[in-house]
Image (tube, rainbow over all chains, first blue to last red):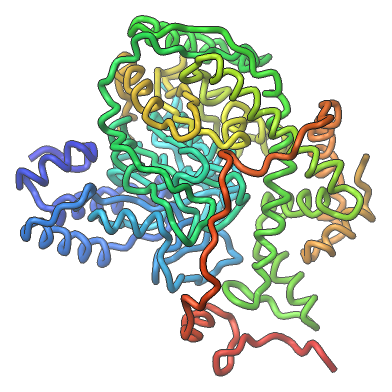
Amino acid sequence: MTDLTSLTIAEARDKLASKEFTSVDLTNAYLGAIDAANSVLNAYITVTPEMALEMAKASDARRASGQVGALEGIPLGIKDLFATKGVHTQACSHILDGFKPEYESTVTQNLWDDGAVMLGKLNMDEFAMGSSNETSHYGPVVNPWKAEGSNTQLVPGGSSGGSAAAVAAHLCAGATATDTGGSIRQPAAFTGTVGIKPTYGRCSRWGTVAFASSLDQAGPIARDVRDAAIMLKSMASVDRKDTTSVDLPIPDYEKALGQSVKGMKIGIPKEYRVEGMPEDIEALWQKGIAYLKDAGAEIVDISLPHTKYALPAYYIVAPAEASSNLARYDGVRYGLRVDGKDISDMYEKTRAAGFGTEVKRRIMIGTYVLSAGYYDAYYLQAQKVRTLIKRDFELCFHAGVDAILTPATPSSAFGIADEALAADPVAMYLNDIFTVTVNMAGLPGIAVPAGLDKKGLPLGLQLIGKPFDEETLFRTAHVIEQAAGKFTPAKWW
Amino acid sequence: MSVDLATVKRVARLARIAVTEDEANRMVGELNGIIDFVEQLSEVDVTGVEPMTSVMPMEMRLRADVVTDGNKADDIVANAPATDRNFFMVPKVVE
């Protein structure tokens, strides 16, 4: 029998349907793979084998009775940001020590309702604040990819680093992830996987630990475009518990695959050609352009003049919202408590001990920009700039552009504990330079692997679409995937 | 605008995060680096521009103002570090 963990969701779905194996077989294969790899890769922070096998058994029973959901029997990994009833949910923070929610997030409930099986909770940057997975309370995740001839351990990107690494290393069939400034697309690009951040409002945020509420969106990281399409369809829903979730029909995204891109207008924004960008990235971009041109798409040069303001605006809006959202961690209702001489002292000591350096830094920035006298100069100004960023995109779409093609990241994966990045927070923030505009405008964006750099590390391209036009992204990304092929790391762990 | 040590301590107090003298000193440099970086936004002309509120123009959904949930005090306090008969316990606040 082939290694069951090498199958995509679509392949496993077909073989489960033809009774080649059961969900219990498939789940056991993944549990074995996790067991063998996790001490090295650190992708999972909690594995739930009993629960997984119970869910797999229930799935097999449902199948036997003719009840087959869209993800029936498919084992998935869940980012630690999603509330899972009775199971470790800490956003990989020390401050949520021991937290086991009494409720289930809407996104994960949707997956279980469609028959999926949970393998465990995945590592991530603390409260999703980071681009390398190094801010996790549970230590960094190791990227399954290594540069050719090198033994240096690389980061898988972040914040959904555990999700991306687990998918790339075949430790789950697919994973949930979230994206506030690039946290799905950057790790997908660093690991040769596919990640889509849908339009803001496509997935419910209910039960997802909040970072920056006007930017946070859930989405899948998967092995290929088809799997991402299958997963997103299950994850998305309108939800009365999240008033920002949108009541629009959810298309069968998988049907968009294989449709032609002939005559489609693909915009190439000149502002994404940044100074100091490695030539590998530029070459990859040109390759992507050529793939789409060959498939009959029309390539047009466009301008998004406010691009350079997206990252600075993000570093006002996101910390401001985070400082407010994270005010709830005070040692009273859940998680860690450090006793103090009075209640204020308890709050301060709890938060000092419970939050990591990066989270504290962002709470401080957020508190500062929202403090008396600075609100208009920073937060209001940033929200106005956001309108301009969004308008840039709208003008392009109005002019007939169907999707925009850019690199996903300014580099391939970098080393764990990179000294230059550790010394300068802003240098780390620049990782999100191509992805953050999409969150600021609320648009959908997909990262699809398109090649390897000179070091043999995967690189991704990003496609940006119109609001709620994820179908065009899947269709176009699929064309790139067909041309570029898929990328799997050589197993060393 | 630049952030000095006194400002860092004031902001830390507002954020309810205890900081040591060393941490506060380190944060002065870090926060100034970030503030300098975001400062470039001030060069954007936003005359007549409304702040962004939503991706798609949408009306806030309303629901009837009725009780839809409740009677789960046990669930609510289940994760609290200190409780007593479904109350959250905190250090004494009023003398």
